[in-house]
Structure formats: structure tokens, C-alpha cells
Length: 304
Ligand SMILES: O=CC(=O)O
Image 1 (tube, rainbow, N blue to C red):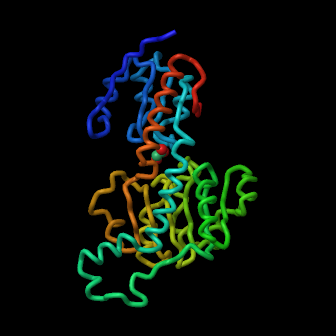
Image 2: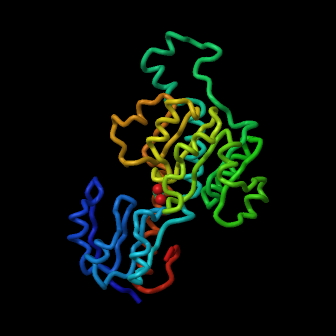
Image 3: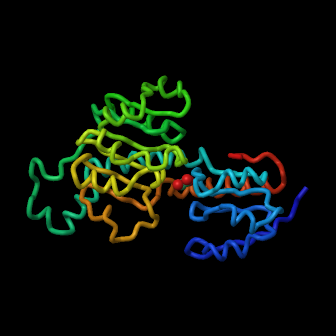
């Protein structure tokens, strides 16, 4: 039995402006949003009592006020699973790009630095994964997919933190430790955990001071996990060796931002899940969640 759904689509190049969103949501039964839209009480109230579902085109849901949604009995769909492999691959790529100074090396070619130094034994030296200890903060789907990939690099140890027991992490050779121990022992600290009120700002001055001065810090999760001023200081002061960021605050990062002035910081523009296949799979899943939420049938990926 077919049911007709009327769609109102924002197809601007930029995210929908807040005012426009507030103007368009009244009376809608479902909202399909991106991470660029803050879905809070104001939006939910503007939508009104017809609203049955918020379907986000993302695995992260920190842009949605989940308490406010829950209080109104509205369902939430998201896109876990379909992006795990793309993000795990990107994480590995960013780790290598940071540790082996890909972008810095490229800039050296463009600026004539290579012609000056030629091939020389210590020029552009970085860090290698082989034989190292890697710490994964948050062994969710993406953290675990990363763990599996890291094994192929023959790292020495893989440590991880997790909110609940992760026997599959141990079974694949990882070791669960406390956050502080992970920071102290890891040559690479890779953050893959969700942004929640508990994890907000967890990478602060104290965390960077606990890390080895030779440590590489990677964040592919959310910028809000990091106290960015503390990170800039840690990179400038040599408290850690380098950082690779796919996420930061704010996004987009202004082109004059201090993080972009640091030779030991590799920054890419939140492209973790950006492969053609993955973005299509996310689109399909978000649409299926939306339709199921409106029809009241079971959603393929329901968070609430
Ligand atoms: O950051 C992207 C996502 O949460 O899917």
C-alpha cells in the first residue's frame, strides 16, 4: 500500500540558514537533517506536534538535543554501520599523513625547500606505526574497525578505552586500559569516541601533558572533545609531537586559524565518511529511517 509523502527540500549549496529552517519546519511529520543543523527545542517547538521523526544523515548525534526529542516522544534515526569502513580508512590515512608529514612535505616542494635540502638523512623524518603502541579512545564500531586495520601494520600494542566491556577488542589482541594509562603509554592516541557531555573537552592541558612528547594525536570524532587552545599550546610547546585533525571547532575552520599555522598539525575538512559509496549508503539509510519513522514501521537504524 503506497502512501504519498510530500517533500520540501533545501537544495542550496550552503547549509540551510537557521531562520529558513524555523520557517519551513512547522507542520512537518519528519525532518531529515545534516550535522550542520542544530535540532533543539526551538526547532522542535516550531515543527509542532505533527513531528514524528528526526532522521540525521550522520552517525554522530551531538547536533540533536536528545533529551528534548525524547521528552516529545519523537523518534531519531541515524546512519551507523554504513560509514564505518570509510571512516576507519580515513583515520588510518590521516594518521600516516600526520606521522609521515605528507602535507608539510608537499608544501616543501611547492616552496622550493626540496631543492635546497635535496635528499638528506634526517629531512622530513617522522614516526612509524610498526612496533609502536597505539591507543584508541572509544572502541565503538569505528574504533574496532581501526583496531583490525592497525594489526596489519604490526604495531606492538593496541590499547583502548571503552564505556562498556568490549570482549571483541581483547579477542583481536587489544587491551582495555584507563584513559590516563592510555595517554601515558601510547605513541599514537587516536580519538574515535562520541561527543557527549561526559567527553566534552576531555583532551585538555592535563591530557596533553600526560602524553609522551613524541606522541601523535589524531581526532576524527568531534572537535568538541578537544580543548583547542590547550592543543595549540601543546603543539607549540612540544608537549606532543604532532596532531592530525579531521574535526575541529568551529567548522568550517577559518583559513587564518592558529591550527593552520603549525607545521606539526595536519588538518583536513571533516571528510571521514566522504566516499561516493558511503555517502550514497548514508543517504539511503537516512531516507529509509525517515519514511519508517513517519509510517510508524520499524526503522532500520533507530537511536531513540
Ligand atoms: O561526522 C559525521 C557523522 O557523524 O556521520
